[in-house]
Image 1 (cartoon, helix red, strand yellow):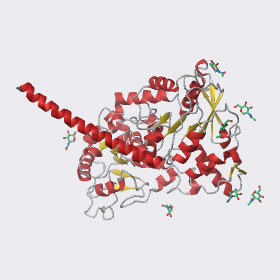
Image 2 (cartoon, protein in one colour):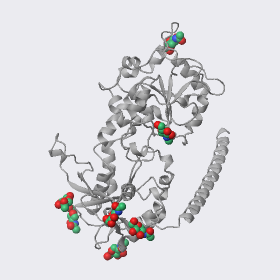
Image 3 (cartoon, rainbow, N blue to C red):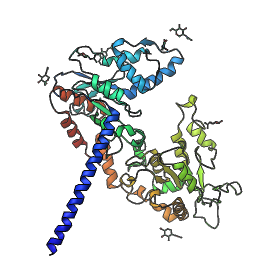
Length: 508
Ligand SMILES: *[C@@H]1O[C@H](CO)[C@@H](O)[C@H](O)[C@H]1NC(C)=O
Ligand SMILES: *[C@@H]1O[C@H](CO)[C@@H](O)[C@H](O)[C@H]1NC(C)=O
Ligand SMILES: *[C@@H]1O[C@H](CO)[C@@H](O)[C@H](O)[C@H]1NC(C)=O
Ligand SMILES: *[C@@H]1O[C@H](CO)[C@@H](O)[C@H](O)[C@H]1NC(C)=O
Ligand SMILES: *[C@@H]1O[C@H](CO)[C@@H](O)[C@H](O)[C@H]1NC(C)=O
Ligand SMILES: *[C@@H]1O[C@H](CO)[C@@H](O)[C@H](O)[C@H]1NC(C)=O
Ligand SMILES: *[C@@H]1O[C@H](CO)[C@@H](O)[C@H](O)[C@H]1NC(C)=O
């Protein structure tokens, strides 16, 4: 009886599963067809066998191309650039690249962007295992270069010299959409040899700013990807962390709890000699009362200049500032304060202007400010897995507790075994977060617990991060691409080569 009942239930399950599976397949089919209908491009698959045995491998870098053009456009105003007519056999590719960057005049380019020379090509010495060969004095025998990879952005790398000439490998410009007209119709279908490898690298913004790179039609064109998100990318480039690493990993440069506390300024209050700064509740309009009382710092620093972000951080801060006093030295949101003179001096100017691009150092200014604050707002421009920037690392390095909203998996990245950030994700509302911050700010023991980690070893997870990037430092995208191209020349599987490298580096 029981068995029969179970069987009826299990048959029902089977029927439900069949229905679900069928509708999923139909949905996928429909989606696929709408998709391909829009794309209407055919990817030509090149033969997998080829023997070229080139001693030097070339890489054409579209990011480099864009940056070089921008540089020349500034220079050309000063009449310092020599322009050349683009040769006819390069018009196909140059027109497609120009279209990508929305440039009208495609008859001329600075001559140094058309014709290669030792000045326009960078030699990168590589080892057969895919590592960069460094001319360091530590271990000379182990650092022998085994092949050269030449990296540049001159168009003549595409000139079809002979039938057995290989086209260069490509580093894509992920900053711009990956249009079919360039990437599929031109680069893939006309300028891809059997040993041409493609790579792309996201090493500035999060993937959420580059939606076109997650389109499977396009991402399948790439042989190697570098980016922050471990669930998507194979190799993780040096994250923002690395500018501050010496001040975060256990070294003499890391500030101890005592040093951090010495940098905080106590307020003169007989009653609360232990309270550093008071958080004055803001009035209901979100205006603080700083004008009516003698100048008292709040405990929280906020300093952002990119105000419209996917994370909507300005909106979050507007709400938070209704419940807690914040010193706002950025350019977003309410109650903006002028930068103190000493900070202007440290960062080179009050704000970035064209004339001081080279000397302006906003990071130095922010560090000088954050050092004195109990807390520093650290809200990323996008709330994306593994995307963690200087906004977190600067306050951690200088001894201010980050009030963090960003990567949902932030705890995978923290160096501390005890608390070291205020995680805004843990509070239902900005009001709840404000109440918690007020509590921590007014209890020295509690506040100091956020700096306990400074006198302890870093977390196990963080040790794994350090060891990953120590190994990763021996590799770069160029040597991996060139190394894979060489594998094809020898009729070996470039994917196996890449797998071996990935295995050597490991994961974290
Ligand atoms: C290329 O090199 C491989 C291994 O070094 C060799 O077996 C092959 O004969 C070479 N091919 C050509 C065309 O030189
Ligand atoms: C720019 O360079 C051209 C040729 O090199 C020269 O004839 C012209 O006078 C220069 N213009 C200025 C403003 O220097
Ligand atoms: C394109 O730019 C070059 C160099 O600046 C100039 O000589 C040429 O006349 C321009 N062509 C068009 C169609 O504007
Ligand atoms: C350019 O560099 C190559 C090697 O990278 C070297 O053999 C060659 O002599 C250089 N040419 C000039 C003109 O410096
Ligand atoms: C390159 O040369 C080969 C053979 O000479 C030819 O078949 C091919 O169409 C050429 N490719 C381009 C892009 O001109
Ligand atoms: C930059 O600072 C100057 C004063 O130092 C000010 O006049 C100007 O408006 C500021 N520019 C911006 C974009 O904030
Ligand atoms: C301050 O925080 C510590 C640690 O959380 C706690 O034990 C203590 O009771 C708090 N003191 C006050 C006055 O709330």
